[in-house]
Amino acid sequence: MKQETVLKEFKEADALLEGHFILSSGLRSRNYLQCAKVLMEPKRAARLARALAKQIRENVRGDIDCVVSPAMGGVLIGYEVARQLGVRSMFLERVDGSFTLRRGFDLAGKPRVVMVEDIVTTGLSSREAIASIRALGGRVVGAGCLIDRSGGTAKIGVRLNALARLTVETFSSENTPEDLKNVPAVKPGSRGLK
Image 1 (cartoon, helix red, strand yellow):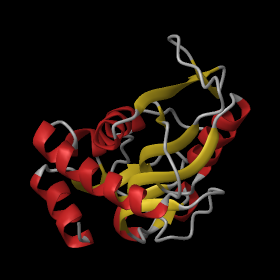
Image 2: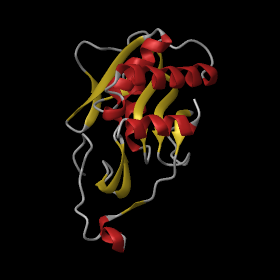
Image 3: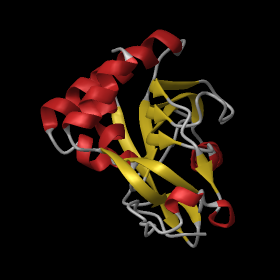
């Protein structure tokens, strides 16, 4: 799937927002990609996940045993990518600030895992998820996301497959551009501020 097609899916779902946004990292941005909204229509979610699963299959050598995603943002796309790959799906949850498996999920037998999430901006949550998967016994053989907002600069320790790579300007609250200083900042994501 071409990047233009992916962005068209976001636009048609009203999931490519413009304004003044506070990201999970605490950084600010003029643009926000609302993955929950783009994934709420099952046919669209299946199209995007099929394309991401195809890219992952092409770039991961050997078998894939399961997909593990960080909650909350990665749950839907992780499940759908796992379905497209024909493997199990699990998700990590934060407990006392750290990712772990709950709900009877486990990585016994050292499965070959692909970590999938919705958006990568700095790569921090991806690195945290990968470290947790490894600590819990999984062998991370690759990663995937719908959108890499870093333009390919985020380093997560494994190959990151992305349907689209964008370079989206971010800035600190102290360095808010003049045109946004009087625009109320909103926090549309699921994670609290740091």
